Length: 222
Image 1 (tube, rainbow, N blue to C red):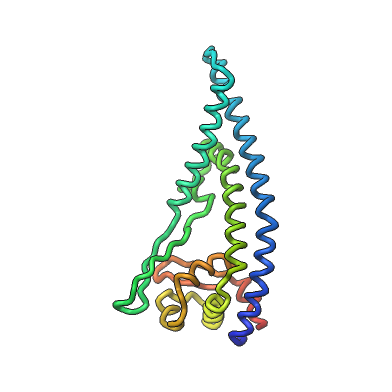
Image 2: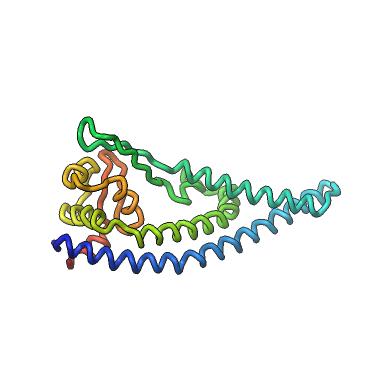
């Protein structure tokens, strides 16, 4: 295995490249999300107009417009609310009597929001269409946040954790990481490691971190 300096140099170079690629991808996702949102808006306008016509109800065009805008806002709010349900919290105290750290991590992806039971039916596909715009927009915003964190990455702390994981070759529990790296600001490192592709957050007991196969392979040459 490489020296700590080798891991830091590798991570510094990699975070710079990934940060630039995230910044490049963010506008694309936001633009696609905006397009999908406009498409959703016109689909809602068409659906409401069709329903009103079928019911022979005379409704002013601006009323349909404002109702459609309200539904778009409601879909965005519902998507954000459901994403917040996927956050996992874990309390960590490296030693008895130490201050407990509350670690928060998003545990479910977008597909889990659409198919919580693994079932796919007409309703979930309609929901998927409605959520497409919010998902793309929030993903684009997340890429900007990710790039910002990558450019300000705690290289020393993250490289130390990654080196430890590479040396072990398997999941290392949080308590063990904190015990072996007592100088580490674990809360800060935890947040920064979230944007390092290939670092796996494993929540089965005991919760801990591991490296993906691709990242382990990339690090084997250090």
